[in-house]
Length: 479
Length: 66
Image (cartoon, rainbow over all chains, first blue to last red; front, top):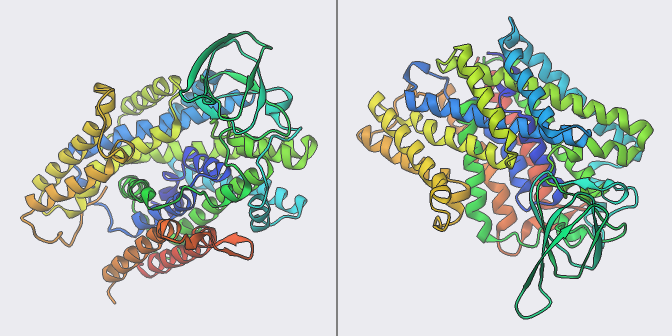
């Protein structure tokens, strides 16, 4: 497999868009996630080549489910993009699912993955370079300026202020200063007032055009799909308190370490399971270079978006920074075509990624077109429920990691099967606890968010014991 | 150094580079928050230094392993 085709399976639009939003929002985890998105596939590329004959049924099933979940996360991104373009979200899912179903099954589709990836990366870079050159601001200067703002506020040109915007996901917004919020879609809005000793919860049944007056400390719960309009010059609810807090999250301390390790283990394990081996030699240099350029571009998008319009991360819509930044930074005349180019880049990236994902299913012995159709259909059905795409992506990568990572240690087929069963079983059990028993807490809580933290070590231990406690065989097994 | 040993060393180096980011961010006294030329040390590391080192390392090993 060519180097670019190998990394195309990793460079999913949802992964890059999630990284962009993380940087835009000043997420404490954004720096190590950015590094993880780059380093995880590099580790997979350097790992020993695959011996697919040893991949067991449990691992194959886990890869098929993981591919379905990754597709679903991409489809949710398509739904968000459709909503930002003024169309119904289901239309985005339908279009993305139709393309995902048909394009990989076209003759010669696998050969198009690398050229599509190249075009997508170039198209993603062009608007970013235009923003940098037109505003004459280097990314580090933008970061530095963004990190010295006294407050993160709505500008008068913000879409949240002019026409109002739609919340793609349910949200709980905490207001640090008073603000009048205009409701643009009828519904029930819950406000928790915290100005007394015990919090007061009020539910407001509002029609379009009515306003809510919120005081400092109030918390507003918003359902997915609700449209709201905010006041210009006021602080963005839920955003960091200041530029300094955006640049250096004040809650970064050692208590975040398990979560950081969980995220990085998920990325590395997921990459080991999904990124295939590539041909070695001079041409293989294209893969690390493509990863470097794409991740750097994602960080750049996030920095410019966060420094220009911190409200771009407000609605929980992952493609919002990429689709809105060019217009906000350069004006509608220059920015609108560049915004469409960015959308085209995400779409091309998605096509390249689905062709590569289909390639992974074929490589693990699941070549039947019916299986691909089932994966796309299930993913579309899942996306229709509008889950959080980042959570769905983490589940997919985590399951693949838990079921497949131990294969590299196995000295015998039985040990590999046992490791896969234990890894996948532990992962499913930890994910299932909050669903089966909503009141029950998974301890520690980080295991509910990153089940690989327990599932992968359990799988490794099982494989090691079943292999007789010896060292891994020389010709290691991998997907 | 054999190809497989070089590859193992490179993978270890990549993982060390990766873990360096949360270590720098979460260590007591927050060394990652120190600003160098206006940007925090953490972002210089996670956004520039570590990615360049990791990419160079991967290219060397992948090209040599022909």
